[in-house]
Image (cartoon, rainbow, N blue to C red; front, side, top):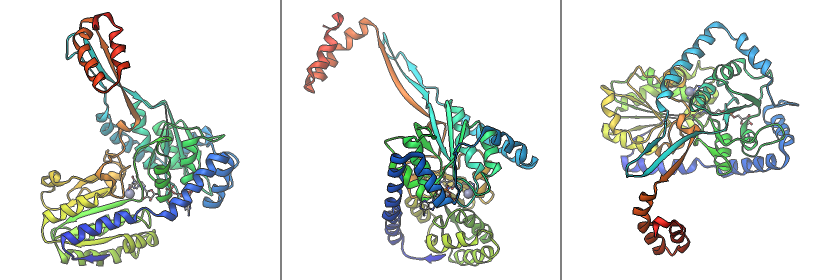
Length: 426
Ligand SMILES: NC(=O)c1ccc[n+]([C@@H]2O[C@H](COP(=O)([O-])OP(=O)(O)OC[C@H]3O[C@@H](n4cnc5c(N)ncnc54)[C@H](O)[C@@H]3O)[C@@H](O)[C@H]2O)c1
Ligand SMILES: N[C@H](CO)Cc1c[nH]c[nH+]1
Ligand SMILES: [Zn+2]
């Protein structure tokens, strides 16, 4: 990876340029055309795209329930156990996110409250272009079930030899209602607008490549979306005490997701930077997904060397990575320094893949700097809130004059008169 030794100020300026470059007009044009075609031609457009992008000819998009049940029987005992452990840990973490709403009677005769309502139908995108993601099924479906969503519709790209049984087994374990084999931007368009076979949903959640992330951004408004969970990223903050072999391995764990994945190391140690680069070469040589990981490391990755630990956090907060590893002695003391990151991994043992699979926090996380304003997927993403009030007559009598005053100041006489139709309010 290129090593950058420019000043903090120069590096902060480069972060802005890089983030701007992440929106690609060519991809936006491609995705817009796909969305419009699906909106107009429904299933027929989906069939054409699946043949074109995934080389699969489909008559029916829906995966039969019998195939899903069979998948669970088909997978080996160790995989069943791993999925069950992941489910238990994800569940216990996400149960703590439950919001029961509230109601108060803060002033005499007035009841106010906020009611939390689960979404009726959600669409869960499970990636499947270059890898299979049973873990992502659990990460979206489990919080949806905890929230009480009525219908979980899952989409995932078709595969030449059929959908990976591990993905279907995870769907069964997590309680997904319907699975459709359709992927990419066309799947997002189908969920947003509905087609003859695919139901329109209220919200689309889940990670995906640049085509999926761009499509989600474009259909927002027609449906809700969780956030931009695009090509994976890892930022590592480390000093000379870090182990270069482990740092390189953790960088590659995310680089292997996508040639557009972003592996970033920021360190106070030029020596560590050089050692990590040597390790990357050694480890890349035997990595099965070498071509993808190498493209990510060489084109998207970089190592920044800065003089102080405080500089490292300033730069990383500007980058706002999806995952942030803090490989410094006594790492938990730095939690307060972190403003922008999707998920944080403290210390040498908290290697990023723990969070991808079994730790319990969600792995569907904001990318491309959107951790500045977005959160991990959680139970809160699968609910909406409605607020309510109820007034006793004496309470209305005491507050009516404030309403009529404010209404008339705004020039909204109708508001004032509505209140004054109540005898007690005059
Ligand atoms: N941020 C997160 O929370 C998170 C979590 C898990 C995975 N991810 C990311 O998900 C992504 C998975 O990517 P993937 O590619 O394996 O699967 P994917 O399902 O996201 O994308 C595959 C689909 O992309 C479409 N596509 C491919 N090339 C295209 C082209 N030239 N034009 C139009 N459409 C095209 C096809 O329809 C294909 O089925 C990776 O980027 C990974 O880093 C992110
Ligand atoms: N690291 C990914 C999020 O960027 C999640 C994942 C799933 N499987 C492996 N990794
Ligand atoms: Zn991962």
